[in-house]
Length: 478
Image: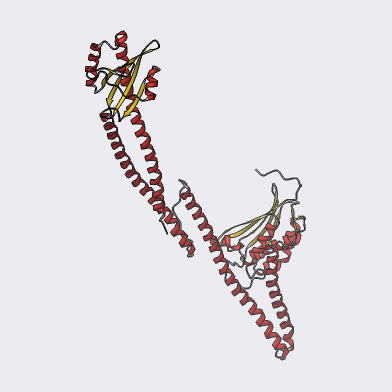
């Protein structure tokens, strides 16, 4: 059987409150009843002791004093009876020689000179009364005692009236508690319902849902954690979608790039086989086949290289290298490509700047970035800088090219990503793998890389590679 959470909340609240009120009501009722009877008992004892004091040695004979007291006590609805050592009534005179029915325990206490108090007696008198018996002893002899009785009807009516008010108060309190419980339960259920709807939306694949959170209570903290979870899921889904889009684009690019050289190779081979290519053109055709084959090999190698780096299969042989030597090699290797774009490569390195890195991988990093700069720079300047900082070697490659759109800056490190989708003739990194490999290699050196670019004003790549361990560090720059 399904019971709504709101009803469970209300039942638990009201159940606890009802039990608490019942226990409290019983305790208060008993306390008030005990207090009322205690006051009546003290009143009767007070009168009795005063009477015994005034009678003094005239006990059993001073009827005048007893009459005076009887007149006063009747106004208080209290009745006075005096008895002798045998329990026979000696006052009032109308009941003289009648025997008072004491219990054995009561008479034993009287004989010992102890007072007897009975809050409610239903049997010995015509009506229920409260009674107090005060014995009077002279030395070791019991001369008798006095019995003071007061009907409990007024007292019981007062207690019943108090209980009636108590019941009304409890009912009102329960009513108010019911309203408060309903209101609070409604609030809690509304918040849980909100979480439930949001969870259902996430289960359906909607990751744009959020719920109102707070740090007021556990439900608010749960809502906050839910929002964080959905945010991470949304980010993950965006990344998955982005990766999927790039994968599709990569497959399209690869298909296009492979189809072109394969078609060229296939056509030249068919031409050679069928002697359709003149003898004077055969050498040119073979050179073209060789060039297109290298292009395909480069595609495969880039992918294999990337996966090796990602899976930590690449082992670095780090050594201290003079940075200016590496820059000169890069400048020499790319001189022809720079000349084709009418670019100038400038080397700017502080004297004796050393870099702690794997030589081959460092050359690969710098080649990739510099080729990228050449590709997007025409009639411009490409500067290779190097210097030693406090705990690292800083390498900068800056160009005056077309720059990168701000929305593309963070994406250039992604695999398969190409900021310019139309480029198809890049001599290295045609497939958007170059900068991904660069970043992985820098991270493999425990370094970091950053790029700053402004559209139309050029791009600057900055690399920080840690110095050799135990090597004295330069004083930090101010």
